[in-house]
Structures are given as structure tokens and as C-alpha cells.
Image (cartoon, rainbow, N blue to C red; front, side, top):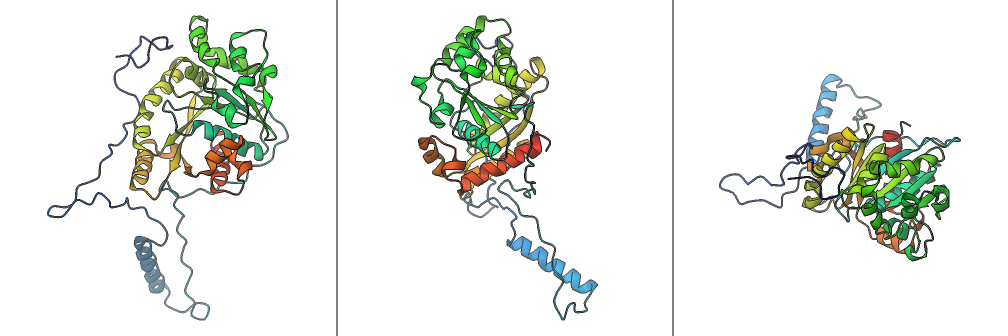
Length: 363
């Protein structure tokens, strides 16, 4: 059975199974014999203040007294070594440096926001990560590569009023990218808009020579003008998504902290591996981003735990929690970093921007 449908650039070359690491099954261990099932028991996470941490501090205190029982500073006890603060992924949160300002722009890193499942936060992450990077002085270009045009709408554009879109850039040789790029309300962040016309490009590109490199060709003239180019992919693994992966240096996988979203990542990993092998050897998974996380629910904590088990350090330390401010900012047509600048959501994306700069751009 083929991994890809008709018209896909990898069609006809089926593979059995998946090359991705297996996602641990979702199950809860049964209770001990003779006792009732305790399916509501939370996953134990070690946090400062927990009973385990208190026991460890007590043991350390006893060791300190045994080594040096004499009073210090008029009877004051030696300060205990502070435990690292554990983040929602169950790992210690890193100390991320403030991004340094830069005076010379260019040599952009192209990053695709990719997940074949819809509604996982690809567009929201593209808008708000781009805005946070722009706040740190980076020149950012957002590419709306989804025929639904959600990225363009989320930045206040009317899809019916567009004279030119990325579709014209893909299919008409006489249209230049500078004619299509429009500025946004965020200083330093521009947009390559899209609308429903882009849906026709997937059919028309099938007959083109080097069809998988079309987006790479049209982005090449502006690589020297931006520091980061973020591509918002459509929720599928079709030809448009393959174009985005071929044009990219890295991939960020937004993943809703929900079981069905977790299951689909293996198929995406297989597609990324094929593109890396056959079309774009430099392609690299920059990170997996947990979105719509609610640490109050057992299911959310279980999914996050299994995500870290399967992907390890590839999972970003930053986690995007659920908040109504994201929906409100989308209606307002602006990023959350400007709509609700002091909100927890805005702070999360600023933290993610620091992590992306430190991890992916070697700063």
C-alpha cells in the first residue's frame, strides 16, 4: 500500500511501516492485585516542593550536619543546593540568553511549520513566532502556503481583495516576489499572502519539470533580505507540502497535546525522511512543539510524557498552553505579542523565539 495518494511526487513508491520511532502506546498500568483500578492517578512529575524533593533535602541536610556539625554564622545552617526547575516537559528548563541585536540581515533560515493534522496550531505558531522574532530585531518573512489562507486572514488581510498572491508567483514567470510581498502591522515582519487560488497550483504543478523545487526557486531572490522565513504548510502531505520541505532548512512540528495528534507524527517523520533522502539533504527537524497543553488534565500530561519518550531532546522545552487570547488576537488580525503583550501566551512565544534562535540559528 502506498504512503502517498495519486499525483503525489512519491506516488507509486510504497513503503511498508514507518521509519519513525514507535510512539509508546497509550495505556495506564493496572492496579496491584486485590485493589481497585486507579485510572485517575496522575503521572508523577518531580517538582520543587514535592514529597520526594522534601525527602532529598532532608537527607542532604543530614549529610551536611554529619560532615560539619559545628554551627556556621551564629547557628545558621548551610544553604542547600537549589534543585533545577522542571518545565511542563518534565525536564529542567534551560537558561536562554537574551538574543543579541544584529546589524546585518540576510542568509535566511527557511523553516516549515508542518503537520498533516489540522487544528494543531501551525498558523498560530507561524504568526506569533514570527512576531516574537521580529521583536528581537530579526527580519522575518511569513509564507502562507495553505489554500485556506488562514495566515493571511490572521494578519488582517481580506483574501478576496488580493490582486496578487503566491499562486501568481508560482504559475506566472513574469510576476516577481517583490510585487507579491506585503508588509504587516509588525515592524520587520512581511507576508507572502495566499488564498483559495493556491489549490489549483497543486494540480497544475504536476506537469511541471522539477515541480518539487518550485517554491525554492521563487524564494531564492529574498534569502539575502531576511533572517528567518517561516512557511505555514497546509494540513496534508501533498505536493505543496513537499515543495515547502524541499525549500526549507528545518521543520518545526506543532503538535496538539492530544492522542490522535500524537499518532500521526510517525507518518510525517516518514515523509520528512523521504524528502531528505531524495530532494533536500540539508533538511533537519528543528523541534517538536507541544501546543494547546493543559497540565491540569491527566491526558495532557500523559501525551506530553510519551512525546518526550519518543522524540527526546527534539521536543522544545517551551510549551504553548491553551488560552482564549489566541482566538481573540486572530479576530483582531494581529499577533498575540501586540494584542495581549503581557499575556502568558505572548511570553510563551517569546520564550520559543529565544529557544529557536539558540537551537536553530546558532546564536
